[in-house]
Amino acid sequence: MKAAVLVFPGSNCDSDCFYVLKEVMGITTQYVWHKDKDFPKVDLVILPGGFSYGDYIRTGVIAKALAPTMEALNRHIKQGRLVIGICNGFQILLEAGLLPGAMLWNKSLSFICKRVFLRTETADSFFTNRLKKEQVLNLPIAHGEGNYFCDEDTLKRLKDEDRIAFRYSSETGEIGDEFNPNGSMEHIAGILSEKRNVLGMMPHPE
Amino acid sequence: MYKVIINVTLKDSILDPQGTTGLHALNALGFQDVKDMRVGKYFILMVSSANKTYARERAEEMCQKLLANPIIEKYSVDKVNFVGVGTANSGGTL
Image 1 (cartoon, chains in turn yellow, orange):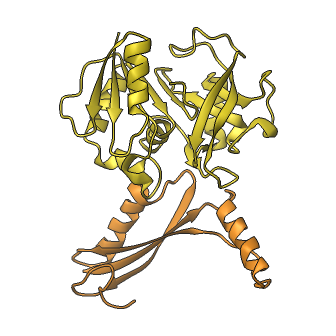
Image 2: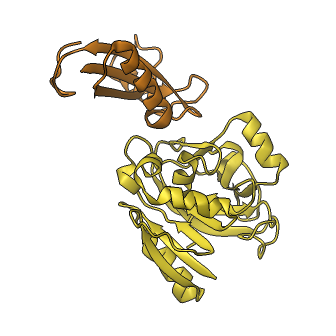
């Protein structure tokens, strides 16, 4: 397997992703700068967390317009290859229309940086198939805009098609407002694309 | 050159915690006459266009493609005024 970490001006979790892929998992990994013309033929692309383009106008939206690599990323996805968008990477995927929905400010209006629990909602994806359904993970979040929102039709599709990857939960996997750090709809922490080859999630698995 | 004013706010159906917090703060400062508040973004653009209609059309496109996210926000192109030359800061009066 080969992987690439896509770096935008303002990305700040790129080194963490690179380190985990290369040093911990032993995957051949390279960085791709947002302006690189040659997009590598890799199996997995990570869009890391951070504040791409200063979060101007809306988090993630400038990447859609300014990053020359976005077109190549589109092709990569259409070919059925894998993408994980983490935090700001998830926000970019939403703004680029590569995953459905949008991010609102955290309900509390605070930037939240802490560890949370999340429950695996589906094991049916490349990214989650080594987890068990309902398995609880303990991961950090660090975001101001992680309050996931989508319209009712989209939500129904996400549920019907088993595309909610993770929900915020208690340590024992209970779901409820008290375990939801940002007010996200249906406690959603991560979702999958229709073809299940793109995962967007707010918590940081790296 | 046309000076274009665009306002973007969250859709009515979406909670605006910034507006609610601002409302409480204003009330606390003695402005009890404020009963509701929504917070949005204000854009000033200088658009080169042959006529007003086209400048407005372009502004609408800009809203759809970048300035607003139709899933959560609504926008209005509030003013499109011919101002000759100038910058967004100084270009004519509205």
